[in-house]
Length: 345
Image (cartoon, one colour):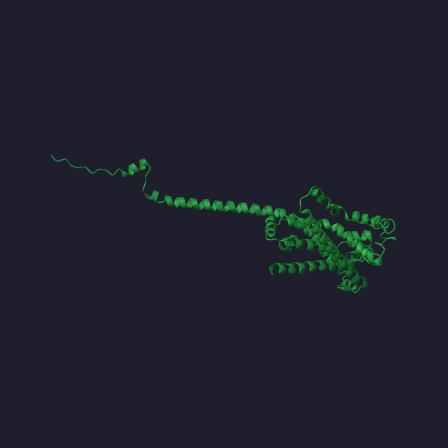
């Protein structure tokens, strides 16, 4: 008898199911599922990055907004109010009636055509130029001196800051007592040294009074220039001086070719800030001379104060202060542009 062969059943699906292997339609869809998960993860990362960026920007604005509000409230508003006031007839009656008629450029015409303005402008230029020259030269000399290390150098450098830390009213009052023609210690010392028998009219002479306030302002501004220039000197690499010394350069040559070119950006900052500060000096002149004698120390700043708070012509005083602001901005722009051209040359 012949045995009939039976067909062997295909057990591969069953085996595949039992072993977890499946090459059917489900396996074909696995790559699509992985790609979808990657896309989902990418979207999640994007949302996390966007969320972190949002909180970072929010934190930045939380720091910026208070500072900007402070500047607008305490600097922006007074400047705008001062500009508007300069075009109005703003007097003491305005505080009661609230009326401040618009007068256009009348306030500016009055102050610019005044005889005191031309004299005050010249005095302002002389006072600013003399103060800046003395402050910068002496400040640079002290900065170069303190660059060397010696005993008690830090103590002396700290004591040099005292004139800058004292209130200007205190400094002015002290110098007024020292320069008093009759009882001042300066004239008393000159008499004892037989350098002057009658003393020098430091505050009462028309030519000596301006020199006196310039010297006082130089004394006040030396620490500021010394601190800024000393910090700039510390940033100059020492190996440049060593290389210049090996090339046979002396102190003057090293200063000319090493110190001054690298210190020029700091010099620009010191001069611009010094001019902007000096051109509006009011405290020292008011305390020491009050603008006298015979308007010899009257500057644009003191004239603006006099118009506003002594004559109560607030409109004209505001116009005078705006002229002072324009002069300061013009000097700063001209000097910075000239300095930039010199650096690019």
